[in-house]
Length: 138
Image 1 (spheres, rainbow, N blue to C red):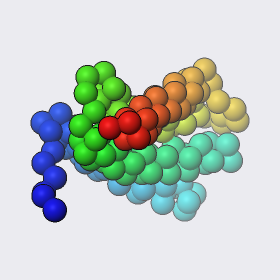
Image 2: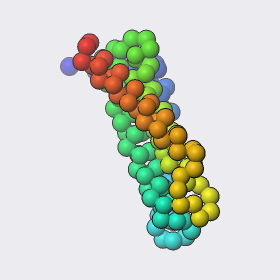
Image 3: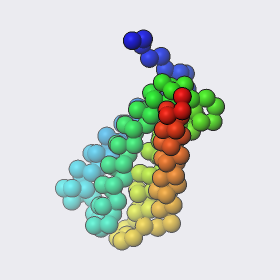
């Protein structure tokens, strides 16, 4: 079986995605401070912090898998770019939406920045659908 050679685009995007893991690690440290009660938060804010951190880790991992699959399928043009970038963009927007929509003192419901979560969900859907269809049709 021949070795998989990554495209330049995939190598660059994967490198950037891997570097974001440091921010997720910092988020894990911050989560331990929240769990110890060192950071005053409402239950709503704690829930959104957990959701943001969890989504970040899962979506970054899925991003790396999708990059390799997009190269394996040799998806061309816009479809290839959507397949490569949809999930990494979602990995920024969805956690960002959880974090930014719950920022502030004594917050008990999301602010208007919750739209980032839904925009990220659209990016995620577009990325995985384009990759899935591309894999099934190549």
